[in-house]
Image (cartoon, helix red, strand yellow):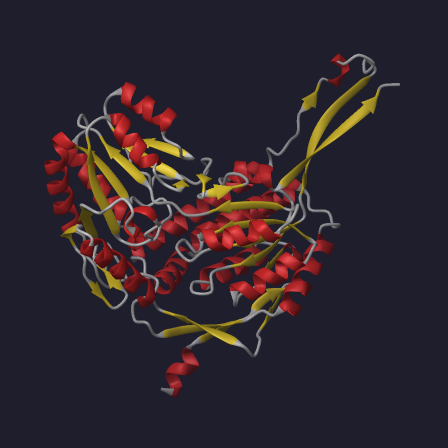
Length: 480
């Protein structure tokens, strides 16, 4: 046992280019074996304040666009070189199948590539102020300047790519970053920081603080040198940040309970196959994962049969085995929560069509019908491998059901009628409406963000994030 303990890696905080190991530690586990694989250091207010001060001071140093581009491009090369190592880390700390972890590394690489490219395109615009009476001898243009120190807070479900969505645009825009990754899946973020330093990033442009989210978050809020908060995670923490940030910029990417409409004119078998694949990926722990499916009454029996068939083909098991489609959830606690929510719905009259079984941190891909609209699996964000199927008659009814939600991140619509597609596009209240694919479709350079309780303050995607991570400054010149 002593030899096994000695193999467990210990990671420090990254502050000022140095890895600082603290006496207080947290344990990171392999989510399949549930065994300890690493210890991370816990940051206190002292380390938070030191990191912010160093990041703030660094903003006075030159950081030319060409340098930002080259650093990000070298990071892209390193991500490609270390793909296997990073994918292995992601599989261990999240439990997602290895091929999905490899796909995440590929996406993270693209996110950094897009960020590098966008660094070269940051610009203001000409402003024709000479058209105003009395301003005929003046001209104006705007420039975009870094906001300064950005606090980036990221979740566990895509522990590498979502970090890249914060760091990549922030560096491209010339900012300094204080990164707080998820305490349950922080190692891939620490590995990324190593790559950025190896790529030549100035040491005070990025600091990584691991540990207790509440402690670090409070210290960041209290430090007025932090100019912006970029947060991806749950509604409760997001609302707290918004409440306490004052006049500082806040971008929140929050949850969803994605609605998906299946109209009678779609290819039912293709639709069922796509829904099964997208609903349960990453054990359903994706904020745009399919959660609510509304299928037109006349095809509901066939759709449910095909959805059940494809769902039951999914293999649940060891995420390191090639055949595995679904690994464990992030913890037993979360799997137990899912089990409780499904059982509550069944007690109120819902029927489990497929799945509905828990084994430790595993929960089988589950299809539920007949749930009451007030059930937690309908109203809240499940964030687990569960979909709820309900029928509708007309498209107006389907759209109303999708909109009957506190969330509005993305929605999916399956139809071959242009009129139905456009009606849904204009009337569904969400940040994106995906036609003939599910709500879970995303590529990393598209604008991504929601409305209602799904988000606030701007979009992600490197080009759009850079707009939020820069301030527009107007320059007025007198020609004489």
